[in-house]
Image (tube, rainbow, N blue to C red):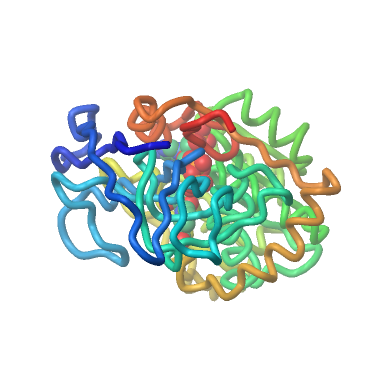
Length: 336
Ligand SMILES: NC(=O)c1ccc[n+]([C@@H]2O[C@H](COP(=O)([O-])OP(=O)(O)OC[C@H]3O[C@@H](n4cnc5c(N)ncnc54)[C@H](OP(=O)(O)O)[C@@H]3O)[C@@H](O)[C@H]2O)c1
């Protein structure tokens, strides 16, 4: 049983692209769990693009990481010592105590998960905030209707893979982009999207014209930058854009689209959202996703790296065009 834990702290705030020197490893002694507390060993943790924003200074929708303090993020772990009878030893729990191997916390601050329904890592991805982001962006924000045509950028990533599949489940025509040939093949052959293209080759606008000659009803925007500009041209009148993220500009800002005037003439609606405002929709998403996953109708592709030492590089890789992950990037901290 863990009495110490290794953790990763913010060593310095990056300017532009972060380097390995932004992260510092430390070993801490864990306290004995007090009344109502549990000791948890993490099985796996998430690295997510939004964490890049938390490395910056200044105010945001979520508190910034603090220099010298451990980073945070979702993790799934197993309770190995308990002083709360409602959360006994062996329980699988979801927490925000990622970027560390083990921790002691109040049991009431953790979410118990059903580890028989799916592998633990699925709760970091398709059955967690990632899947919910896709769901909320498509159906709550963009109000995607059955049979409509939707374009999804970063389509082979975690949110993108979920969005492509939720849209296909509603009989929509799905157009998706990604940054490598391998990802295009995955989109086409595994996720069965109707049209997939590599946004780093050729002109995104030409692809969209070919894929949706009558125009797009919805654009699920994960990137901003040139793909947002192309989509604005190719959206049909009264089209909707779910502004989910802007990864093309997380390290260095990218110029805004030069054609925002398209939104006026075509009466487009562009709406940003943050998944944490929508946790009440989780049950509806899970009611559809869990049976689909169990029936093999939902692909839960994950890219694993092993060990806490690998976490910074796995995170930094996400921020690159043509990143190595297909589906959700997961850092495995323990084999079972
Ligand atoms: N609004 C919310 O509440 C919310 C919640 C979760 C995530 N998000 C956003 O959703 C997006 C996807 O997040 P995720 O967790 O699913 O990550 P992900 O898509 O699994 O990984 C990020 C992907 O972004 C792509 N990328 C990196 N740099 C790029 C660039 N310059 N231009 C275009 N694509 C680039 C890479 O794929 P390629 O190989 O295809 O380039 C990479 O695999 C991010 O923008 C994230 O911030 C928003």
